[in-house]
Image (cartoon, rainbow, N blue to C red; front, top):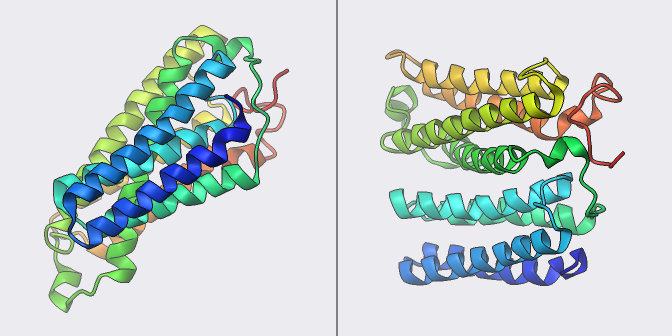
Length: 271
């Protein structure tokens, strides 16, 4: 399997996910589940085929990590839809996934079998996969925050309610809790990987620094939500800012002058 085949798998998966989102809006639950799951299977089949073809986990380049993110977004959307029955969540998660798929289509990257020694650690794959799942869960939380801030019609009483717009606050918090938990696990895997690859658990590398900033930002949201007199809109804005910091941690650091030539995490091109 080569990268040239990606468009066919991506198109098939996207069509199935769009069908699932449409079915959810029409309250056709069985069809929504079936088509979304089929889309996930099609997309994961490509990831597995790339894994076999490259003879390594497809996790080295930004394009490869976007593959996992595109896969996890509809998966998380399906879990949220199954748990809380929000019809719109599959539409938003599908749209975000298609955006990342299009980025990969219009900006393909070199996918070689070469894997530098630092990435050959057994901790590398679980570190990245767990992080991508955390990013997808927190992405779904961000979508929900955007919906609450800009799309949902709300009354004056809801605006001031510490319950954060009735029951949706619980769903939003649960997503953040799960995302933060997996982010923490990913950081622990990363520390074990760093110890094996570079001899130390943490070195305040630019990537590690932004990972810590992102982790603390979500922790601020979690603690702020526990204050009885917290302001719901401020909590939502904290969540959106946290997601911006997450993007900086994920790919933004590649463009920082401080990371060029000094960060051990800038390894998109094999040496």
